[in-house]
Structure formats: structure tokens, C-alpha cells
Image (cartoon, rainbow, N blue to C red; front, side, top):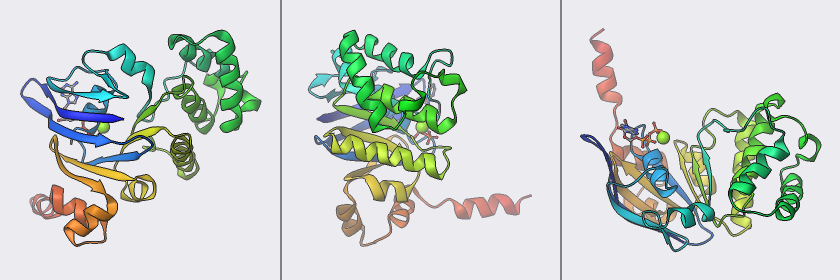
Length: 251
Ligand SMILES: Nc1ncnc2c1ncn2[C@@H]1O[C@H](COP(=O)(O)OP(=O)(O)OP(=O)(O)O)[C@@H](O)[C@H]1O
Ligand SMILES: [Mg+2]
């Protein structure tokens, strides 16, 4: 469903992503793990066609991100960072409908779909309220609904639980599980090992723009002879606690 081929992105001298290749099969939940600045967001932005690769490419549901960006966009749903990006002055319904229109859905299709999604995310009561007046958790559910209004085959989620409390985090996790149940293919980035262990079928670890590990959790654990993903992660990206100590000793 997703085939990433030697994808690279340079920002001036900075090699943000360097020749990353991986595959994600249909219906899989795939986790991108990496430190701050590893290249996760840059990778996801290229897959979402928000950013042009310097070299390499990827196909999403068979469409090429460089040659067929419109086709790719109609096949994907996106949720980037903590910000929902909703229009405060529009109602929830209007926010979702607007995205449906952008994705060439008919008015009838949009109406039906909103009904369905309101049920799934339990937000029937506040559909007609302005988005700006809702709580964070409520807004998030509207953002979920908006991201999948056009029933995309693929979901790209960049740190979807970053900055969220326990119950909002659980909502995101349930959203990912719902997507999987509906047969969608999901890639999400995260800093949380437990989140990745809980949700992912397969994982990739990115370090300084390069892919340093990819596989199922069991494969990765047996390759490294360790049962703890955090220890494997530290082994791959390097433990910086000593250098921290050295720096702290100087002050
Ligand atoms: N628009 C940009 N212009 C210049 N450099 C950028 C730009 N976007 C990202 N970078 C650089 O690319 C590298 C990778 O950044 P990226 O945002 O992809 O990392 P990340 O893995 O998402 O990190 P985090 O976990 O902190 O979100 C960093 O060195 C960053 O400074
Ligand atoms: Mg990021």
C-alpha cells in the first residue's frame, strides 16, 4: 500500500532524510520512532505531498508522490501535531463538510458520511456547535472525523498524542484501532515506546535521517537479543546520558 524508495530531503546543508526505503502493507499500523530531529515529520510531510523530495520517491495506494500528488492526496488522511487546524468560527459539521467538498464529495455523500462519523466518534450532540467553543478532546474528535471524511485508504499521523492528557491519548489510540478495523493503512510517528508496542504491527527506527531498523516488534527484539524496545532504541541511537553528565559537571 505504501512503498518508499530511497527518499531523501535536504534543507540547504542539512540532510533531514537520507535514502529511506520501507514498505507498509495494506491494513498495517506502522510506527516511526526516532529522536527529536531524526526526520520523522519530514518523511511524513513528503509522503503527504506537502514537501517535495530532493531525491527518491514513494507510492501511496499505487500513486506516485512526485508525479501524481493530487491522486495521493485523495487517498490519504492527515493529522499533524497537536494542533487540530479547525476553523473556530465554523460549526463541527461545517468543518468536516468543507474538507469533504475539497475532496470532491457530493453534498449527499457528505451528509451521510457526517452522520456515520458522528456516531463513530460519539459527537452527535455538538455537531452544530462552533468548533472554537469546544473542549480540546471534542475538537480532536472533529479533527479525526475531518481527516477521514473522504474515506482515505491511508492515514498519516505525526505525533498524534503529543501534548495530550490520558483520556485524549486513549481517544487517539482508539481512533487508530478504528482505522485498522476499517482496513486502513496507518503510519504514525511517536516518541512513546509503549504506544508503539501497543498499536503497531511493524516499526521503523530513524536516526539522523537514516533508517536503522525496521520490522515487527518480535523480529526487532530477536535480532537484538533484547526484550525491551527502549533498550534497543538507546542501543541504536546512542545513549546521551553520559554526555549530559559531563556537561552538567561543567556548571
Ligand atoms: N523547513 C525546514 N527548514 C530547514 N530545516 C528543516 C526544516 N524542517 C526540518 N528541518 C530539519 O530537518 C531535520 C529533521 O527534522 P524533522 O522535523 O523531520 O524531525 P522529527 O524527527 O520530526 O523531530 P521531532 O521529534 O522533534 O518532531 C532537523 O534537523 C530539522 O532542523
Ligand atoms: Mg516531528
